[in-house]
Length: 342
Ligand code: UD1
Image (cartoon, rainbow, N blue to C red):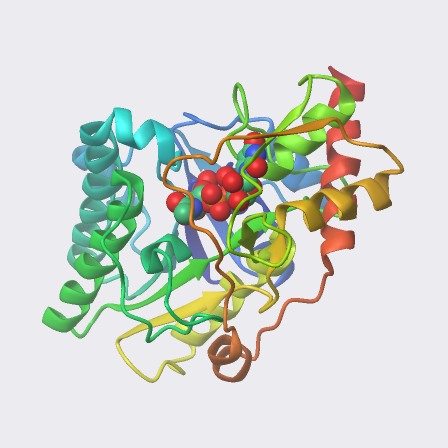
């Protein structure tokens, strides 16, 4: 019998790529998504790639009753991967209560349902934002967490604490928090990828939309940082590599290989890349000269951060495979593919 994995937010960007990798690994995938920032047709893409169409239940995870009746019908779930959340840093500053309600109430509802229905394994989408600007780079999991600069970031910090306390109080539940650095790119088939609604907030979709002519020019936020070329530095990893880490985390929990009830892993390449290096990589793989302009720094931006992924490398046996160029090429292939259709 195939083991069933619940993927919340499974029609979203990282969720859909993870659904593909889980199906490839032989898991039975069930998705809950309210389609707030995604579309049902993503299921067509998952089916095209894997030959399997996951079940989708459309409802809001803040709806305790709906979630309760879902778990009553699906108490054979072996693991939950919780992606569903709001994720726009700037918007969270304007709408803090919406962020706290959505991201935290849904998390609490899921953990309560897992407890009630004795579903033991939980994987949480966390973020490198919990580190703020680290004093030491590359940043390890034991680096002190900094006060969050946005309500969004705070929901990730508080979310991790809620999970830790839940695991401490009830040894039936085991959890892994995965702290993502900057996921980019798309499935190499160009059948699924990132579909930002409205104007993208993140760098790579902004680059590809500019290159294809939807945006006039990329605004580069600052070139006077204390970095070798003056631009902000991030650790960009391919979304397929990131998706595979979730399969490893689920295998680890289901196989009882975790060494603590609650574990935390950095997911990144270990390489810092500046905004200008990211632009150059895009230009190289696309053959396009990107229109951009350097503007003021973006409030709340971290100057430089990249991961020390050695704990994930050794403990999980997971390592990123794709280079920045490959990730950029898949992002570009995806952008061209969606615009061809629409
Ligand atoms: C941010 C969050 C991260 C969150 C992610 C999800 C922080 C510090 N980081 O990542 O936790 O998971 O969003 O959306 O809160 N840039 C430009 N022009 C643009 C867009 C971006 O120059 O139009 C630059 C930024 O200044 C930054 C880099 O590109 O240096 C990456 O930005 P972005 O893709 O928005 O990701 P983060 O801010 O790193």
